[in-house]
Image (tube, rainbow, N blue to C red):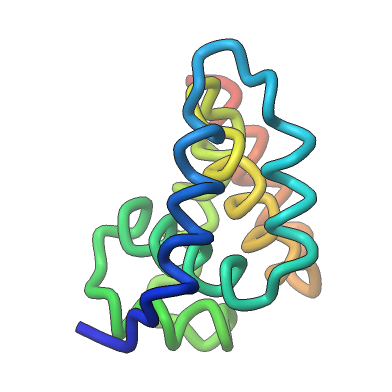
Length: 120
């Protein structure tokens, strides 16, 4: 399943629990942790990618390192574009936006997907 270090997972849990709070009052703190803690960021990106793209943990871990090498990158972009507006999880929004940034060189695809996903 992949490496899951204990202390890092404890930090992920202390990030993800407030990320899903209904009032989103901890949003700034969650985003700050995701920006500044590389290991938590990697684990959260992998977790969100696993769920959003419906792929295995090991595949998601590879995908976050080289997103444009993913065989179904267009589908992933569509899914991240929908997830970036998830009202229930600031962590998932941040991770999805981060993944979409990785597709920046192919901006026309991303913008086309955004337009289509907003129409739904």
